[in-house]
Length: 528
Image (tube, helix red, strand yellow):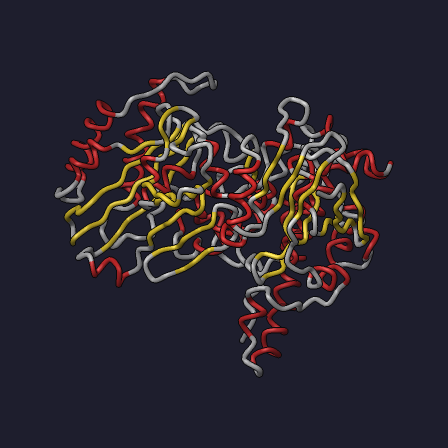
């Protein structure tokens, strides 16, 4: 066991010795230097304490904005961290710094720092190309004191300059057949101090660390070592993104922690013709980047889940293990007919996600088991045709006090497989209604064999109202009667947005999309 580890902080190696395994990055920074005093934990509720993490995800180097108050310090071993102060000082002429020079966003310094971190990540994102993505990039800034239009205008200018740079690099790489490395971010097209250091990052090493209180933190790099450590330290706790545990310092103490992030088998996505197998330690952001273009409802659900800094750390396996009864992703995964693969020293077992939750806050996961992966079937034309299905409709809807950063009242996810206009199979799943996320089995059985038409919808609403049980909740404005009404209302919205079998893209029920134009590029189209 070693009593130290290191990570890069603002371009310099930072050695950590005997620090609390439960401590957060924010707490460490606050005591490290007076210039970081604003990272003090008691200010966490006022404004997100955002920094940028440089990391290697498979074969791709990425900058990810994270919340320092929600990130365990030990999980940064072998990674890079750039604070807003470090970004400003390292390259004052960087486009992000220039964009914030002498600009007024009608907010305090703490929120300007958060804006810099979010803009910095967006500047290097190879996938940020649409108006709606700018909104999602800045959804961590929840304040009435920020001039949002000014932020969007500034960000669009910064991101458009990146797009021009990337386009020119792609033209140069096209001659050698390396164009794809530019658009996927595998190639350093910037050549600045930040990316030069980022692309020097190597794979993370195994870590066996003990703090000053003799608590241990393990970061194994393979499944065999992971299971061995769990057998040797049965009281240990598995941690994936660690977004919730780091906020509980002093309230909950675990003698030993085992990180899943370094385990290669848990940190990859395997794609086959029939499915995606997503490792339990893959972040929600990575999942969305990998499957979101083909499975658009997943990215739609992600946009209502927390904020981008949280999604950059939270993992799909960790989300399932928390058994959040109101979680937005569980109903969609049920509608996608996903399965959970569990691993223990005794071997593997798997179960449909609809059978994973057993009661409020509980799952079928046993003490010696870990979620290995989540298997999500794909639904392309060839696979549907092989089953005799002509089309598959799928969508998800969430109702809450506000768009993000809140406890949802309810989420409904629905999928219908059709043979012409006849329903071959249906999936109707809800969270926030009962004690756990679950499917409406009676309504699903009723829909099978029926025509996809308004008459069927009306008959199904009565079955949903009768069969779906509503649990008591303490949240304001979410009385049982209201949530009971949402069971039917959300399914009605699904039908009227997908009234025809060929209506894979939902019809807009309002004019909001026409005014917002979220799917349009925020830059002038660059000629090829």
